[in-house]
Length: 118
Image 1 (tube, rainbow, N blue to C red):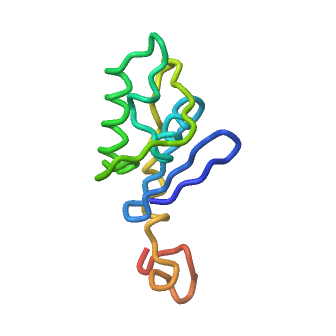
Image 2 (image 1 turned 180 degrees about the vertical axis):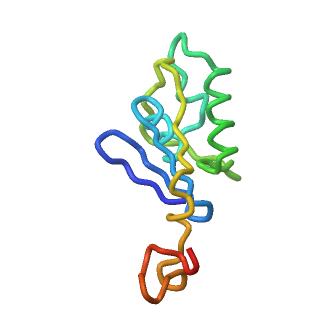
């Protein structure tokens, strides 16, 4: 998995599957805080829904965008989640292209990014 923040949007790409993700607004900020070591509970602001945050974290783990930590870690600065809806977009329309190996998966006459035999 690789990821970068571009103009307020977190973009993550699973290099094994070729699936890419877009996390915008509060979603990108919460995800980045979790990556930086914040615990989900440390992100809760007054009135925000713990169950909604737990569902979001579960979805991130299921997609491979987060993994559980074995030891304690805490982010130095945490921006509280204000309770806005969290979610991300998942795109699989380029998975074949993103999963190509640019060294080995080439057509000798066409080149990359065309898979051999396609």
